[in-house]
Image 1 (spheres, rainbow, N blue to C red):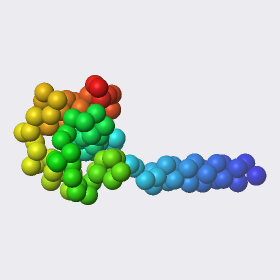
Image 2: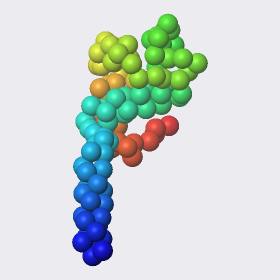
Image 3: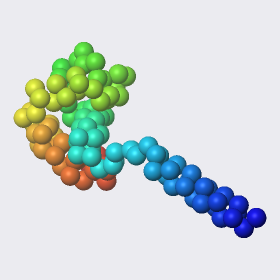
Length: 110
């Protein structure tokens, strides 16, 4: 009986160890690319919400749906064209860099 209990305990601990080792590991939230993407969406949303980007710059953009910014390849393309454009006293690049550095604590200053 004692051998059976020891074997059962050993088997149970092996199963638990194996389950813990095979659990899917998610990448860290602080991944630089993910932080930058989230910060870019937040910055552009902030500027859209407060009229900081001229409507002409927003017209027909597929990443802007009902005044909500959606992260996408098109948003990144738009950023590359407007990177040096000054909105509310800073370039879009400066806004993005500031938000990324403070992410996830960055808040819209308006």
